[in-house]
Each structure stands twice: as structure tokens, then as C-alpha cells.
Length: 212
Image 1: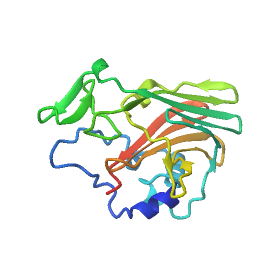
Image 2: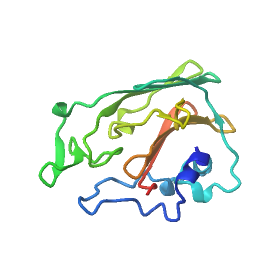
Image 3: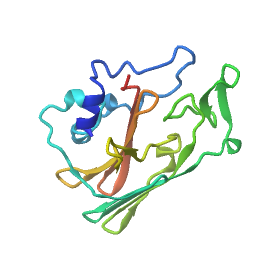
Image 4: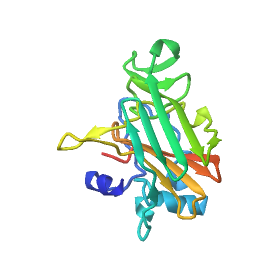
């Protein structure tokens, strides 16, 4: 992932995230990379996240799990007795309480909470589920880990028209940790990593505003 993003943007000050002067930004920074305290997790994250680029020097790339299916509403990774499936569904505004700013011009909250993705715009899709299986054991991912993330971008087409993905599933060298990484390059950029440790959900790491 780094090889693509470095070419897109030089991050001289990634913490100064993009924000329009036209509306307030209510998004929380509590899940930012800079607030990760687990040393092993932080070291691994630095090897592939944009937010961790300043700490990436000398980091070896992690092993990736093969992408087996790439569709408009599904990502499926499988290999090494690991299976990860991320699915989306259309967002239905009528089923949610929307918090607007400036006469319905900007959507800043959904169900009374700020959201991540194409912030200020009406979402088109929401994450329906994140399913993880390791050695035939199902790892429960709490809905709160993805319920406020909208419009994930599963694929793009390169210059030749080939469909590709910027999303990855990584495995740590000691095989204890699994990292499910999604990247959205719109609206200043959003990246989320769900961390699985010893077959249990540990936390998420979420940064935004790093692309200008």
C-alpha cells in the first residue's frame, strides 16, 4: 500500500487533517495511529498505514492474505487458514436520523454520531458485516467497530483498465496478529485497520485527512 500512497502524497504533517471552513468537524481522533500504545501492533501498523509512515523506516513488509473475490459490495481474502469477508449494503437515509449543517447542505452526523468516509456527504453504502475465521474459529467483530464507517472503496481501475484494490489483510511475523486494512482516498482520505490478536478482536485504528 505504501508504494501507492507515497506517490500520491508527501505527508509533511499528516496530523493536520483536512477540514472545510464551511462546516465543523465532529469526528473523533481517539483511534488515531499516534494513540496506539501496543508496541507490537504499532510497529506492524507503521509498515503499511499512511498515518504510520514517519515510523516506517526499517520496517519489513508483513505477509498478506490473498484477495480471492473483489466485487462492488464484497471483499474476500483467504489463505493460511484465514478467511476475511467484508460486505456492504446500500445506505437508506429514511432509516436513519441525519444531522445536517447549514440548511441540509452538509451531513455531519448519522444517528446522532459523527461518521467516517466521505464526511459531509450523504453516504451511498454502509458496511453490513465483517466476518473473520481463523483455523475454523469465528472471530466476533463488534458492529461498533464498523457501524460509523461509510462508503468504503473496494476497488479501482488502473491505467490499463484492470480492476485492483488498495485494501489488504496482513499477518504479523509471529502470526499472533491479523490486520484488516481498508483505504478510502476521497474527502481527504480515511484508513481503518481492524486488529485481531490471538483470535480475538483487539481494537481498530482509524485515521483521516492525510491526503490533500
